[in-house]
Image (cartoon, rainbow, N blue to C red):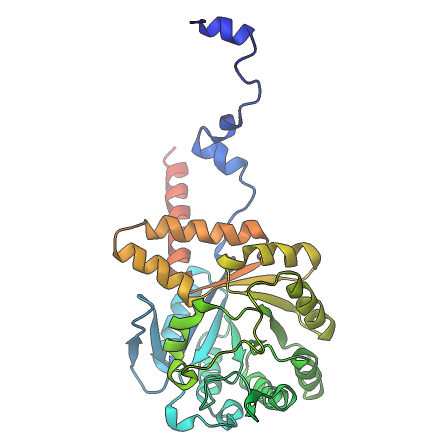
Length: 350
C-alpha cells in the first residue's frame, strides 16, 4: 500500500477541496449564497365571526381561526417579531354564502371589519386581502357558476367590487387568487378610477390545480361546498411550466405589482423560471398541505420540524422567491430572533 506522501506525489489528493469552506460555522455563514430574513415572511391568518374566539384547524396543527379581537392580538405579536405583512382569509358563515357571492363586496363584511380593526390597532403592518369568491359562494367555486361552468367575465365584475371594498377598508395589497383571465387589468383600472392608485396588486399568476390545498379549504369552510367539484377549468395544469411564463407576463402587462407561484415546494422550478424571466417581486406560497405534512411528520417523530421547515424556507430563497407565505411564519421569525440573540450574546461575551 502506498503511503500518504506517495499518493500526494501521484496527484491522488485533490488540490480543490470544496469541504474547506464548510469546515466551520463562521466559514459556512461567510460563503452562504442565500439568507432568510424575517422580512421575507408573510403570515396567513384566518378570521372568523364572534368575540374572544380562537378555534383550532384540525388538519393544520398549530393554526387557528381568530375572531377579530384575537386576530388583532396575533397581528401585533407578528409585528413584534419583525413580520411586516399578513394575509387575511375569511371564514364566512354558511347563511352568508350564495350563488352570486354578494357578501364578498359587502363593505361591512368580515374581511372589511378585520382590515379596519388591524389598521386602527397595528397600522404599521401591511395587509394583503384575498380577492376570490370561494369563501362566499354556496358552491365553493372561485367564481360565478353559469350553465355548469365558472363564468369568467361575469366573475370579474364581482371581483372588482370585492377589491374596491377591501381597498376602501384600508387593505394595502389586493391579491386576486381566482385565476380568471383579464381580472388584473380590470381591477387595476377600477382601483385607479376609484382613487386607489397606490393600492398594490399581488397576482396569483401561476396558481395550480393542486392536491395540496385540502387543509386550507377545511379552514375557510369551502371544502363541503365544493363537494366533488374541482377547479381544473381555471387553475393551471400541474404538468405545465412554460404556461406559467405566459400567465405571469399577461398579469404584469395588466398592472400586477408582484406575482405569486402557488403551491410552493412542488413548484420550485416554476419559481426559478419566473424569477429569471421577470424583474418583479416573485412570491411563493407554502400551502396548507405542505405545512400539514411537516407538522404531521413531526408528531410522528419522523423528522425535526424546525430543521425541515428552515430547509424548506431556504429552498424558496434559493429558487428566487422574494417573499414566502407560510403558516409557520411566527415560528420561523422567533427562531431567527433567537438565533440572532444567541449570536449577539456570544460576541459580547468575548
